[in-house]
Length: 62
Image (cartoon, one colour):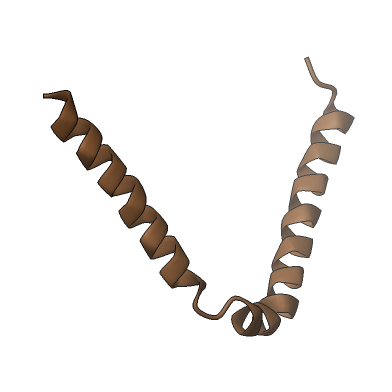
C-alpha cells in the first residue's frame, strides 16, 4: 500500500511537526498568558450556558 520511503517520510514529518509545535508553544507561552488572561471565565460561562440549554431542553421535553 505505502512504500518504505513514504512511511519513513511520514514518520519523520510527524516527528518534525511535533517538535516544531512544542518549540513554538514554549516560545509563545508567556505572551499567551498575558493576552488571554481571564479567558477561563469565558469558557466556564460558555459551558454553563450549554448545560443550561440542555437542561431546559430536557425539562421542556417532558
